[in-house]
Length: 189
Image (cartoon, rainbow, N blue to C red):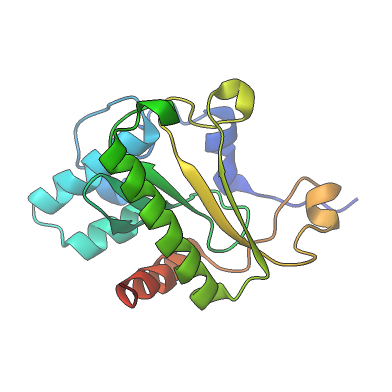
């Protein structure tokens, strides 16, 4: 039997790194807080380091923030199913779609539409998955903070690795994905 190692997922899957604050990458560790939410921590840590001298681009790259709106933002999924897997979410810590204020809900959908255009231009997929998992029972990994998954798909991208080994093969590192998508968003209106 062949063994496939994914040590970078161990802390996420097991919660083994109890010292780490969820959503705070090491490069943003100067932020002293902990809001108890991976996405709230991420935004707060990025904003903190920018306020304290780090360039916005460097901070957002470290945090995987691809683009920001007034009420919502697009972020890389740190554990993607495919290259280009991102999430669109409100800044507000809300757990239900019905709780999202109308202006944020509209912006979320506008960002989802832009995300589709950018993913199409950058990756040329044959399809897309866009989806919300609301609540733990629905499969939400972060049940307390609503987030819309968006990912490009190709015919045959689910193969024996996923089916038999419960392992995904993602051919692009997150730094490259962030750069490509950041440039893609900068090129659309």
